[in-house]
Length: 179
Image (cartoon, rainbow, N blue to C red; front, side, top):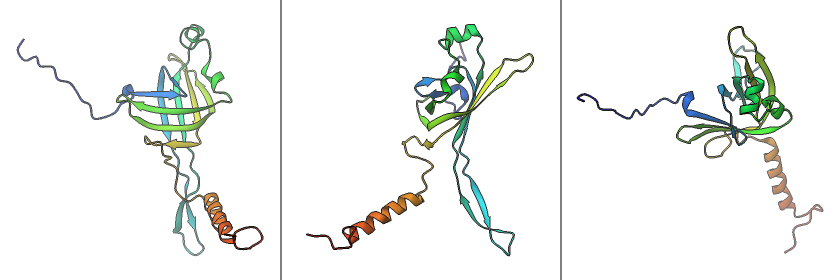
């Protein structure tokens, strides 16, 4: 057949059809939307005498993500979820959430995630949707490093300073260390 020459398409843009979402060690089936974000808590600090900010500091980070999926009927729960509702599993438990693309490339890992909120939308003439929002303790990049570490942790600085001072003193009596 002349003119027929199939070509492999290598898309350059990642889409939702090529992403897997893991909650713990389970792939979340039938997820419709997953949104993840890392609010940085930046705040402008002002001084007396000017309306311009004097400094902008990141005061708190709050990693979070949401999972939106179709609600199952009782038959769907029995067939696809071993008869267990996801909200019952999430109550009081902590999970690691991973976003993995179709090349098996780990995009983000949310560590120590707990469900903050469960909501359900019951529209007319559309499937019922359940939405779960999570707060996490940390977010790791593909290399396993925290993307939240800034190197400005006061507690770590105090501990390091105390250790340096203790080694300089020698002991708690202030006597030089014995050789």
